Amino acid sequence: MLARNSEFCYACGMKFIPPLTPEEQALLENLYHNQSLHRVRQRAHAILLNHAGFPIPQLAIIFGVQRDTVSDWLDRWMGEGEQGLYDLQRPGRPPLLDEQDVQQFKQILDQHPQQLKTAVATFEKQVGPRASVKTYKRSIKKD
Image 1 (cartoon, rainbow, N blue to C red):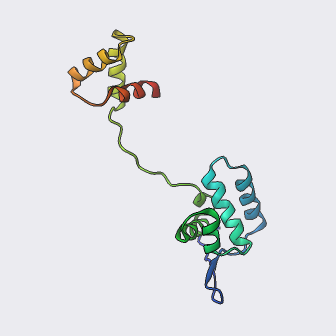
Image 2 (cartoon, one colour; image 1 turned 45 degrees about the vertical axis):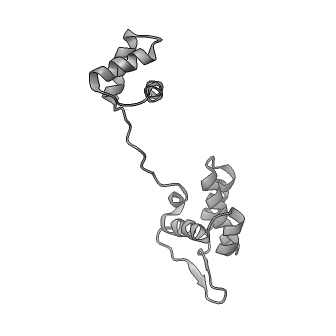
């Protein structure tokens, strides 16, 4: 399935994916009807519609996205198969508190139960200011 080339209709100037095998079509139908992730369902549907003859500009209107976005969906399907339908990992901001900080804060919080602000003040006296009270609260709930 990997590294397939798209077909280009020179008469109409449109890009189409190569014909789908019955297995690929069944996979896409399954993803379209049963996948919990909306974006994956949408991309699978777009590939099925392109296979049925819908050109990229029409798919862009149907899905409310740019035509380059639809073209990227098709390219990723042809290059990566099913994995190309899923979003890539996106880097986020590094956490303000590492695991060691969270453990140290929890120990202080055990000494001052029901007094989050006191525990934050004590922790920040020891290690310096790090984050807001809400961030400390989220960090202890995460574990």
